[in-house]
Image (cartoon, helix red, strand yellow):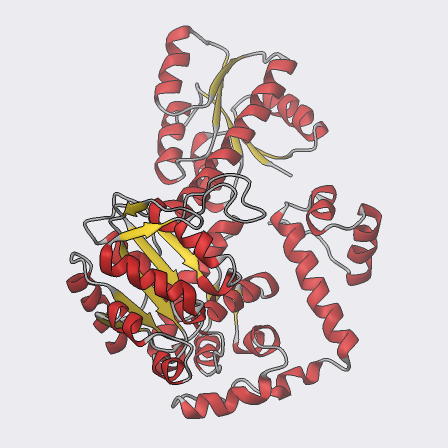
Length: 467
């Protein structure tokens, strides 16, 4: 349910607008002056403001300017009984979405409100998407290991040297590859990524080098391979330790001669590609076992960057966790939550078998299931359910206290059903608050019938909290 604020010094106008908008299922607050209206905007989250221009204490144009200074995406609809074209133009220049004359026409008012809310939603969604796709995530941390990686990237990125990135799953190998590309002279050209482990061995050659029409049964048309797509840019071969030996031979030739041949083709194609590779395997052992070519290893391993496991740099966990916390809360369109000191120590004591990727997922889970401040009890209950017996040992191994996080935190649940009910209640509560208690939209979001959701709300005693 969208939340609207009406700022107008005429009681009759406020009452009329409020009655109309509440009938349309909007949540509405009103105030009779600009000063208090501005304070409300600072304290609460509104989706739209309808503001009179001529008022006591503070002019509506001044309210508009000051409000947009700290909340630039908040849509404003200006209303006035002395409307002129010049006034409308001035309001538009100052950032107002639209201008309506008094007394407002009902249909025009409702259409304008709907359009302003739609535009506000689009602005928010666009910002989230732009942040996701336009900028490579920073390499977070200031430990000695991470500083060394950053320094190596600065030195190596501007060169044409091939780089082999090693490290456990989820440690951030792909991020290192992205920054090597971003800081290279090839950054204006594409970075093409290939997950060698996700492609069947019989298709990897076609994926990398392309194929000609009719070269095999399902080759109904010509296909351009990743080497060609990356021409002039960077090719990132992730999990290269899982590549078949026949594909390795062709990759070696491409690196040596800067030429490729499509599957089923005869023509040699020149390619100008910088190759970065990554693996979570011990390639020397793979070579001993006959699974990886020694000559390809030496071609790829001009520079080696090893990304440490998260448990090898636990001093970086607070910085990473807080960054994920802010990012995920913004994506969900909710106020940024906080982590208590004890909660942070509990996070540092976890075993982190999934590395940084696991930390991101755990922070997201804690945001959904915890209250405004994430505590060590939340970490015990939600961050690693089922893994509590290992937490204390991991904390001791890392030099941190594991006492704050232990299986005794689950004693508040009498049985498994109690825990499931608790988690279900917190999930539904979060979704309802995210959707401003719009039951219909929440039911659609979590894919259950509206009547079923009402039953859950009643079962768990959920109530809307108003400020």
